[in-house]
Image (cartoon, rainbow, N blue to C red; front, side, top):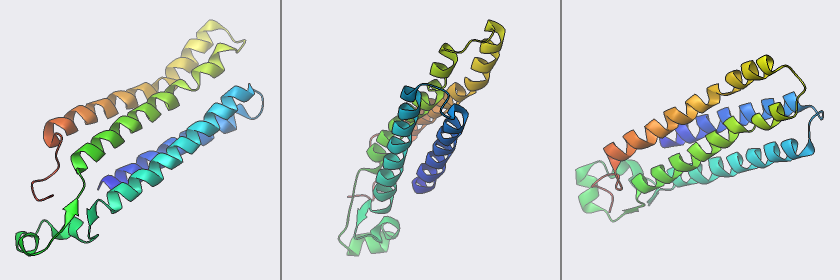
Length: 156
């Protein structure tokens, strides 16, 4: 399930960042374009890293789902990483990416020569991304309350 979260949230962030590049269209500072490309690279690295963590969390590979069968778990040797900790780290990195993605367009507004009223309206539109950060922070708190530092007693 965490695999799907990593892929869907990563692709959503990539979509927003590519949209920023289309908005910029070489009419803004190169720093914004470089920052956006850096954010894109970081999101891709995040996605690849945590997809592998989700897929290869246990050795042997199939013990990720077989370990929930008590008969199998008692008769086979396996090892799983601390998935609660891995999911917590992944969620924190996702929150940092969300904050950076939400704040990136603020640099575009700073240098524009439009009326203050329009700047406020555009800032409010882009600030909807901050609400996503609040949701991710709430997810981290809920997740830590439910899972804590460990994932499951069946993981050795």
